[in-house]
Length: 373
Image 1: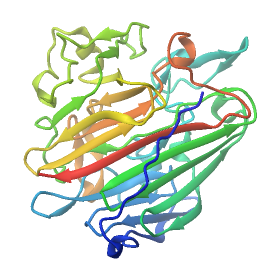
Image 2: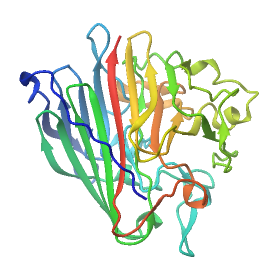
Image 3: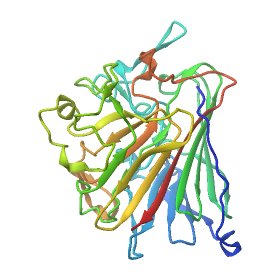
Image 4: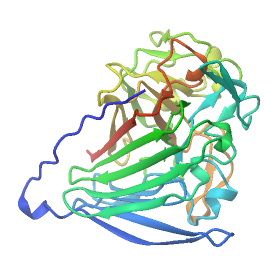
């Protein structure tokens, strides 16, 4: 499997902005075992910044101005490194080896069966109990310039969490002067394996997590989605969104149909927790989603190279999750948009392939562009 990345040269409005984007490196505390965690903050001249930590290669903070220029954090997360381990809710982390679910924690490659930990009822979720989100990544490089950039890497041993092959992974975050945060995942393997890397940021564009996202307007460039069973494993069907609560082809409020109990899929997901099939050709960087908070005016436009995007409305946050500033995170306080192959792809021959072979390079790109109107 190989995702193509479509890159565009960063065109600066004027030479004074050419080197405006900066990257700074600092400590972010330590884990209980003494492991030091670092943070890299990318900042541009427009007042936007992104802080990435080495634990889980996670997006810990994302500061974006509203229509009045007020700068606020629009992603959920924790204030300390240890909380990302003791309160593992995937806030902003890089998820792997396989983001989303694998049915019964089982898959086969070339006739050989592999069994993973079932950490989500009967299924494997997000790479297992100690996936990439709970690993300390290495900072390979930090650079300022037209794009402020950090490259982090992790080497996953052959057999880690039950997956075959030694995997070498990089996550590259870059921020430009057009308020675009770009994330590129790359990986190579020593043996045939399955792979699905993504970022699991929870977005609340209000910049005020005391206000939920039910009033946010969402557009998804997806004419079909993949229905699931009661354990949130895809049935194999590719269902048209037309005439269902899953039709976001035109902007719609998140909360308008999220409690439509007449729809079995809404009942199974406790809201939205489904993979949408992004229109257009997989492997090309194309528009996938737009999210707007009418109150603050902030808008996030998302482009992806992956075939699908998981739309999740924080349905399992129950008020017992305490994040930054010890704020309680509740159901509907944020949304996730996770680009990747479809859930349980290794067990569906007609789904986009999650297989990666030696000699191939896995690429998955997502771009988040912010504005305020």
